[in-house]
Image (tube, rainbow, N blue to C red; front, side, top):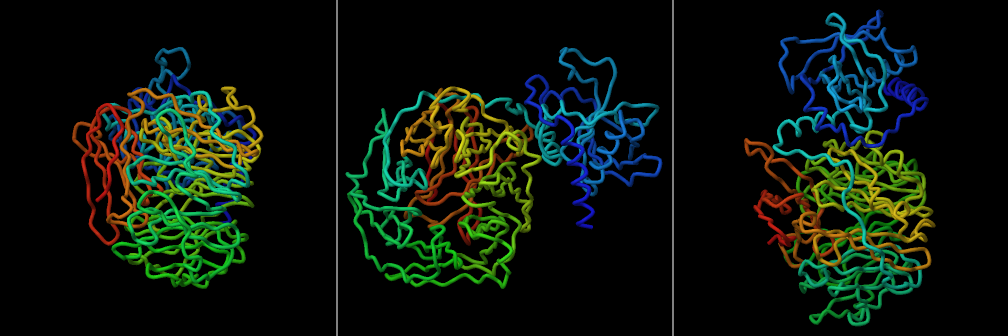
Length: 624
């Protein structure tokens, strides 16, 4: 069965690659226009294609309009060519047991701006569009439309969700461009050594982010003073040299400390009451495992100290909080044969199954191990997972790209990118091919990636940094359909030409505290460039949700944002964010003033919520 499905996909791919399948986003005929102009919208399920090339479809639900029919018939004999018919057969077989979207109307999709004289139908199946005409009660498909990809390029399941949103919401939005731009870049500094990462960190616990730069010849800290980013490394007396690092309150004094790995050994830098750092006990860990791939804070159930998790090439080591040296134990790999997984990479620590406990995903080149949490700070034996990193240099991050409240995974690597859609029940599906322009505009040779919201619309976007190209940002139109953010493209806007030769790393975060996320670019020569986003009051509204360092959760929790949708006060999920004390926050952007419900669940606790009213300025809130 699996092999036959792969053959179907291969045949579809051969057919579609013979066509021009890429279309720019069509601002004149969006899914909102499509739904408004549809007289009838239904979800259907395909039956078996008969020898006469006809297929009877079961009508599952009528979303708009009225119809007493329980089924409809499609006659594939009327396709414009044998190759088109073959392609349609492949798409229908591929969609077996999943729903398709069927829309009928007099559409003005012909660029004339006028209603068509005759009704026709659009059928969305397996991520592609088919145009059909009606003939005596039978629907006759003509072509697989590449032009309609400009209306919606994405999964059929996501289109059905988008249609439901458009029909219910009082003022639906599906952006056709990112709508914001960068100011001219400012050279912040030139950092010596190899820079492995740049990320925000809230060192003082007040909601304002420092810029933390990891370098093999000396880490750096910068803070925006209202006009520029200022180097505060010397003032903070930070002397670490990191290839990998993590911020957590390891000694339980209410201040963020730094655990650093320099490629050979681990170091601990304790933050004192005055905000300066001192190097701690060099034997704070009893070392297990091998070469470090990642360092993470986890909630281990203690009231004042987090646990520590190390991803190594020998496995994942979990350290319980306590007195130094901390004692660790390797998590149980469950006997999974990891030889087929290839080279090992880092981990992701986040609630991946929606049970409000942070899980551990150990990533490899060709697969992964998922350690599901069964209680706070404790994990089941690992199970194999389909998510993979890709070849050589690679990064992974979590985000909620379809707004269903579950965290998805994005990976970038030398051989390309992938969006792993979280389907629940530990199932992750590779969906890059049905996720819009990111499929064919994003490059290979990715060295870093971040989830962001560059235009504050509540939809989570993706930034990719490259070894040999300028960084790219893809804005989310909603429901996992991404468009290229041309207005933020450094090459297209002739900003920082040197970035086209690649970067060591990049970062997107709000460093000047105006509510708009900014861009940090670290070039290969160590130059650090700062791009502030041009900010207007109406496009900088955001609720930043933080976990205090000495708060109710000491490791990652999932925070969701909700807004009213429609007249019945039904709540719609904007998305989910992985929030960790001091180092990551929920960035809940809102396109306009109003209220938003923030929801969260502490490990082992009950769901909590808070209604936040936002008017004309960004808001910081802390979960307590």
